[in-house]
Length: 305
Image (cartoon, rainbow, N blue to C red; front, side, top):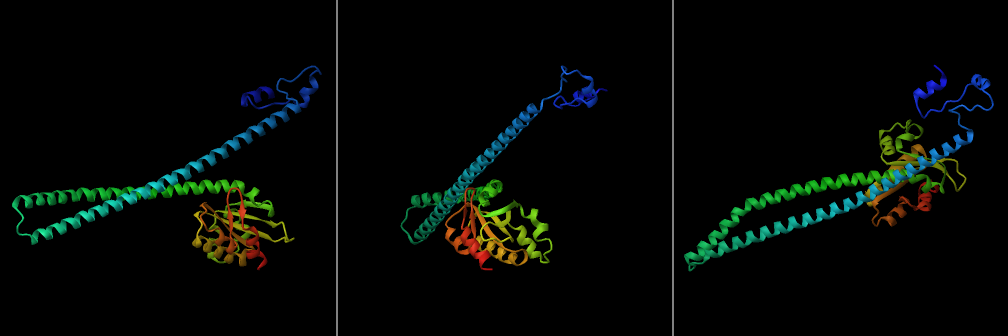
């Protein structure tokens, strides 16, 4: 089968070029039907690159929108949980107050001898109605408790999705965030660097500490002339508090003796008010737009060692 026919049968988008033998048999005026000038091939490649870039930008835009929607939904679920909790507490309080009132009324009735039969009958009916309503109230309380459990489960799932979206966005932004501080940048999940940094470690605790963060950045410090690679361990958490700062600091201190300089870092869905505590400990606070406390972290984890 001729080559041109074979190519055409395989794929309509596959370009075939004439063989040297066929080129020698063609006249200068003949043009092979599938021949594409080099400039056209370059222009087509450029169009393909632009198209791929646009697809990538669209995908990143979708990821950011998902993160924003997830965060908004998480806030809505949290607000609903607070409202359910307040309603449940109010219902329990009302139930208790009614019960106390009935107990008080019963005690008073026992001390009163001049209450007529009609009044006693009305009070007894009221008490009976309340007792009949107790199972319904208990059922409602059980439903509210179940609803609260469901809301908490939904809140955890929403938070998990929001953390995943934030981690993906940060992984995309890491080169831009750290390029001014580190040269020869590499980044990814901790397992990417397992063989290079931690595979020879004898302690299982060291391995667990290495795999604990969500992302790792490594490179050579631009300032100071050092050629020793440093590691930034980034933990993506719902919020930053003293417990989180203690955990990442302890992990960095333990790993530093085995793998060299390690700087702890955190990124949070809800940054909160722990920025000063992070600065004091030399922990980086990373967002999609900035890296805070770099000088303090270098002073704490590199120059002091």
